[in-house]
Length: 154
Image (cartoon, rainbow, N blue to C red):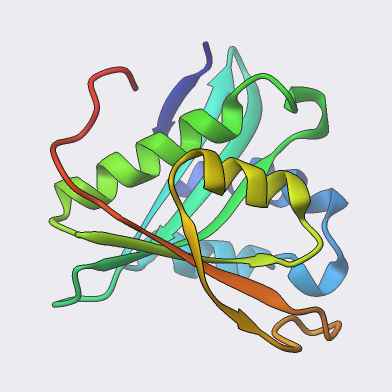
């Protein structure tokens, strides 16, 4: 299994490269990645050797016990290998360590693969946001209560 580690400023090139397949309006600029890495976030990478297989971004607000999973990105060459599951579990564990009790996220309504991932991990649709994305696509707003202690298998 791939190794998970926190991202650093040195990883910005790899993070930008992971988003190459995203619609342009959904990509982060280098400046945005720099800001995120300095902010109240947890950005983790999945790596095998020197290859970056994926990343996850979780946002936190001071005084708020709800974490927001902003994105999970997996390289095309690493799809179907459990990287998304691993990144999601680790993001949940980090959120629990920060005393969060709820994880929320938004996902494109057309992203069936991601929706199945979240449903497998007990996320439930709480709302639908019409024209949520810049291209006008709707989003499903999903959430999951976080309970217990961080898992030991990550």
